[in-house]
Length: 181
Image (cartoon, rainbow, N blue to C red; front, side, top):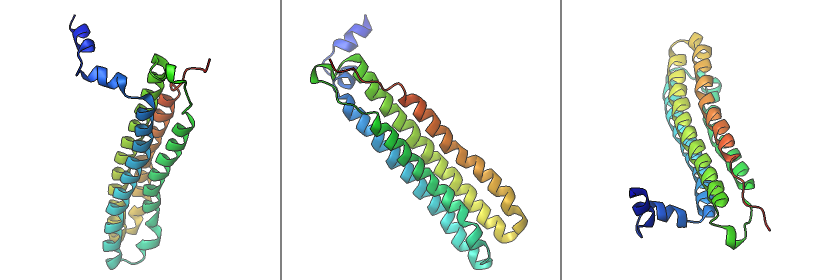
């Protein structure tokens, strides 16, 4: 009974979510995928770069080989761009009579969810890679034999972004729009 009251209430969230165009949800998902991924990459580059510059004062030799950490951070932004392009190709035009059909809503929500997953997975991945890259630069300045060992850990941290991309692609496979009749 309470579900009927919520669905029928004029100001309920459920009613508002159903009345928002699935194209709006799709656009927000695509924007979040690229925007938050770039934010994660920038944050990781900031963390890694500041430590790299500081540690390079003591040991200038670390500058060139520790740039790989910055490249790993930049890959996070590229993951977001790739997924945004994939999600953009999922959009199809739908007749106005079917824009609020269940299949249209499901497609819009699937693209939205995919963008959220990819964006925030890449945000966390950028932070992870940035912190590990910072540690790599600082430890390499102290002991050069630690570089490869910490680089392996950084590769595992970078895999978090790939996991987000994979889950996002799987989620976006649910985005099928109604066929035109």
